[in-house]
Every structure is written in C-alpha cells, then in structure tokens.
Amino acid sequence: MAGIIRSHPRIALQPRGEPFFTLARSIVGQQISVKAAASIWARVLALAPQMHPHEIADARHARLCACGLSARKAEYLAGLARHFIDGSLHVSAWKRMDDEAVIAELVQVRGIGRWTAEMFLMFNLLRPDVLPLDDLGLQRAIRLHYFKGRAVSARTMRRVASAWAPWRSVATWYLWRSLDPIPVQY
Image 1 (cartoon, rainbow, N blue to C red):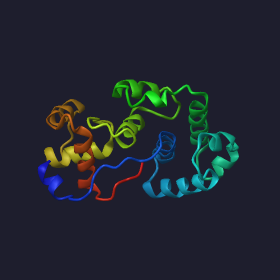
Image 2: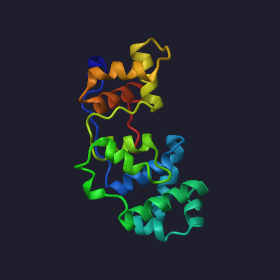
Image 3: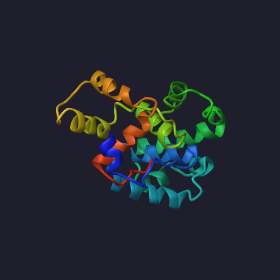
Image 4: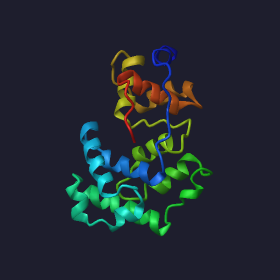
C-alpha cells in the first residue's frame, strides 16, 4: 500500500457536492461506462441545472428518458427526488449516524443498493473507514497487488483490508488510482 500511495502524490479523496446531487449522479452512472454516464449526466444537468429535487420531481418521465436514462433509472431518479422532498430521508442526521445506519436508510430508496450507499459514504460524507467489497475495481486491485491476480474470497479481502482500518476508504481510493489514475466522479 505504501508504494501505491507514493506513486500517486498530490491527489486525494475529495467531496462530491450536495447529498441529492451525489446520489442522483450515482444512480445515473450505475452499470454503464464512465463516458456514457458523463454524457447522460450532462443532459440531466441541462434539464435540471440546479440539480434540486423539485427540478427532477417536476420533470416528466419522458424528458428524463430523453436525457438517455432508461425508464427504470428515470423512475429511480424521480423516486429519489420524492424522498428528499417529503423528508423520508433524514439528510440532516446523516453526519451523526453511523455508517450502517446511513446505508440502511439509503437502501430503502429504489435504485440505491449497498454499493451506491457506500460510494455516498465515501464521496459525500467523507467517511474514512468504508470497505466496498462489492466494488469490482477494489476486488481487481486487491487481486493484482496482493494475490498476483488470483481470485480470492470476500473473507480474504476483508482480512487483508483489516490492516488499513480505520482508513479503508483511503486505501480503497488509492487502490482504484493504481488501476486508473483519473478519479471517477460519483
């Protein structure tokens, strides 16, 4: 890990904006290429320049789909906006809640799974000790740097990562940089 950190000087994990913005961007980027996500996100921002929940909630489903979103993702985005508007998410309490409590609340929103919630913890709340074991990039980096490319179990990855606590978010971020020096935006 020390070698990876030394080979990536003057870069650091940075916050990614307001909670709604971060979660909306994560939904848009799920299961598509970074390039496609950036293109679709630019069109969503043109539709909702302030990226405020009311802008998304007021947009018609067809207009969201016209941005390049699948029908399902358009539903997820509109649903997320409704959760923010109706106050069913305890946004102001998230900074005081522990990681698992935030994850439990976020995964109640359709379109947000554990991975998206973990990305939110890392990139929005800047939680230092998140270990997103379902992340394919993290899995690949651990295999590459610790096991000569061999597949390993989640239990084994967790054991390796125990040495990084309480900074597993930072270690994950550097492992991602070892695969791709340009950070992905969430």
